[in-house]
Length: 65
Figure 1 (tube, rainbow, N blue to C red):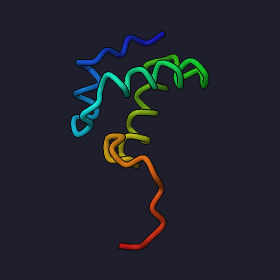
Figure 2 (figure 1 turned 30 degrees about the vertical axis):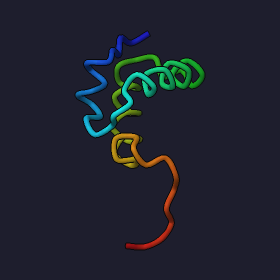
Figure 3 (figure 1 turned 120 degrees about the horizontal axis):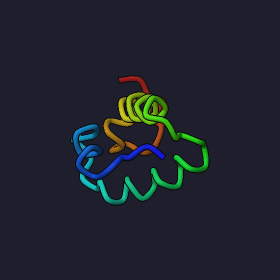
Figure 4 (figure 1 turned 135 degrees about the horizontal axis):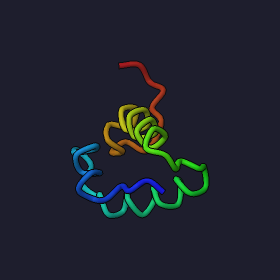
């Protein structure tokens, strides 16, 4: 398993304020979906983090701005 700790996570998603909770969720998701290489972790964090504003927006908004 790729070593992702709280300090690294804080750097990846600085706008999120619940890094410990996020880390707990990631541990479950990463195992379930075999996100188990540094490339897969990086891809997941980059794509999902961007789309959710560092995992601060957790509901889809289909309204136009």
